[in-house]
Image (spheres, each protein chain N blue to C red):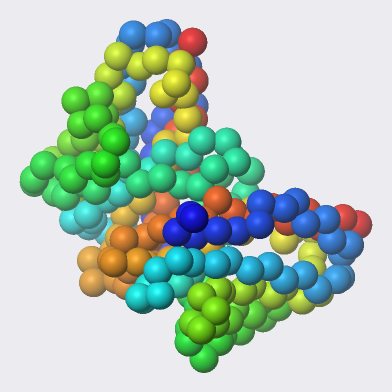
Length: 117
Length: 108
């Protein structure tokens, strides 16, 4: 299947700093990527939909100025958590849909576990 | 009521047994349904899509009951490696809505 690489896998940062997470589609072009957040024992919650070459679409309740998304190429989307606080500590996962694929054919990155001290 | 609900478990099942769990959804107009598997601290991986007529893939059988608005996953001859969290996903209004998952523990 298609491969999505996410980096870094783990990150620990101090409160107030910014953290960038990268999501790359390695063997296909992804016009659309999705960013999810998952708190312990909870479901994946869609944060935003990232479209190549245009602004991301954020879900209700997600601050676009805090979670900056850039999808500058067909193979790379980045999520930057700005001025991170302990409540931002979570598991962040990106996914990409293969062009022309069905709605459920999402390929996920490995996830990034963010811990804000 | 949550849009997609699952029993969080955990389901503790002896190896070789058959286990089944359901997932209920609230939007009767939901178009498609999926089961994903997520291992601890890993990303979800598609296990199988759920078709109206039901479908089977080896030891795994998925069924859809539109009248009662639930989907089910049956695992036969369970293996230790089946231990994971199983996430139900519903395509509702062209958005994927995720359940919180059912944790399954297979014991030797």
